[in-house]
Length: 151
Image (cartoon, rainbow, N blue to C red; front, side):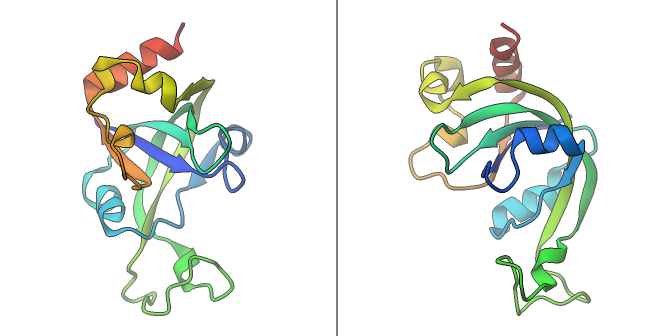
């Protein structure tokens, strides 16, 4: 089992949206490294730290799990979508998505709090300039964070 931090803008899909729907496709990823994580590394059941980004209070807002392996992101083919990619075709899709299912809504674990713990110093989300929407989380980071959220 592996673990991931996946960022979503809450105005687009929030942890509350995921709780209401039960499962969502993780669409709109347009970074090759993040796409490759989905394509090459994610497995069913992998743990997900659901992170609210680009908002007034960014941070981990809940837990999810990978529920469907990578498949073509349909938004790349839709000219009306902000994620449209004219260079992509159904025969040769460039962009993928996975589905994630709701596990739990948690208290918000913000960046300032994450930075306080030496156990989390290596997390990619805390590195200056990190803008990836999907980053791996080590098992020790996952265990530490989930223990904080259980309090």
